[in-house]
Image 1 (cartoon, rainbow, N blue to C red):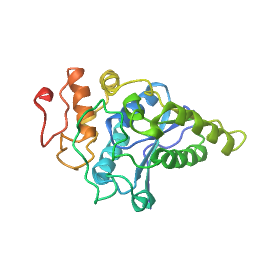
Image 2 (cartoon, rainbow, N blue to C red):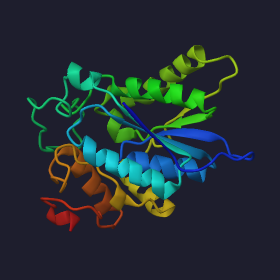
Image 3 (tube, one colour):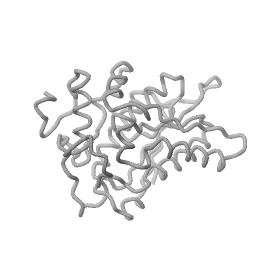
Image 4 (cartoon, rainbow, N blue to C red):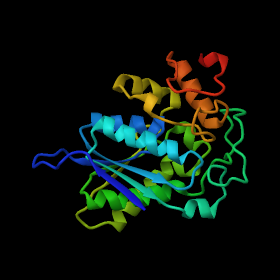
Amino acid sequence: MTDTTTFDEPTDEQSPGAVVLASGGMDSATAAYEARERGYDLYLLHTSYGQRTEGKEYECARALAEELDAEEFLRVETSHLARIGGSSLTDDEIDVEDAADTDDEEIPDTYVPFRNANLLAMAVSYAETNDCEAIFIGAHSEDFSGYPDCRPAFFEAFQGVVDAGTKPDTEIEIAAPFAELSKTDIADLGRDLGVPYELTWSCYREEAPACGTCDACAYRLEAFQRVGVRDPIEYERRPEYAD
């Protein structure tokens, strides 16, 4: 099932296009604003794959597309990742654990096996169809410590797949602009870019309010605290350091 919305009519003098993998979270939102800052027209691709908070993530991704006046917003609903399972994000029988140590390098149970390869494959199809020159993904250094498909080596390898598997005249760059940055760096950059973080969602466990205790909430709250900004979304349990 797809949901496609066109926000702008094409013109004869358009800037180069970029597909942004828009999860609805703060990293992908910042990646979208970074792509716009670099002069790209935006095509936002949002995928619902059975994750616990897919309704809220879709709401945020769509609101972001409207805020950015994107060329197009495409939502694709897939079920295969949920049916395959193996992650607490998609399997109701696996509990989302509370954050214990944000410096822990063990692969967490929230890892969705090979998810980014699935998402990037759809993004390449979308980009090639619309003559886009880049695909932006918001993965960063704290992601790839726990998620193997967020590592720079993965994106470099996938670039080779794109180059080998598209038309000869197609040139699409896999852009992971935050690969060497931390979540705090992203929050700091997003503040400068004017990212409306109130329109984003990071919680793995709940759609409203955010739980405040899962890994995603912990990383997000710490990032805002370190840049001296109060996170604008509501939390069921907001740590004292984040007030």
